[in-house]
Figure 1 (cartoon, rainbow, N blue to C red):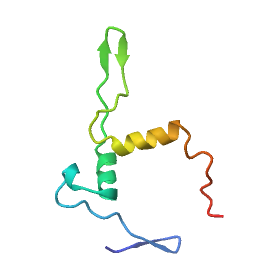
Figure 2 (figure 1 turned 90 degrees about the vertical axis):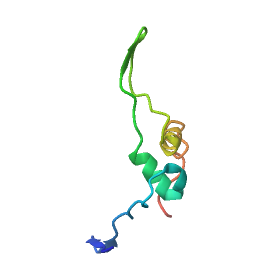
Figure 3 (figure 1 turned 45 degrees about the vertical axis):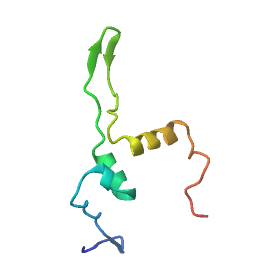
Length: 84
């Protein structure tokens, strides 16, 4: 892969997915990238109590649900991202 120079630094494009795109055959960052790019939401449905929207399909949602939990529980709010 040929890097792009951004602000004087070499930035490489992300690696391509493996040839096989079955989630059970992916691991680590490949699985995370697959799940984030294939995370889907349910279509809005009108029920007797009203419309349901923004429901996540229970497919490829492991990493997305983890990020949501960390955000809503404020698990990372007390930690500085600054290296010093």
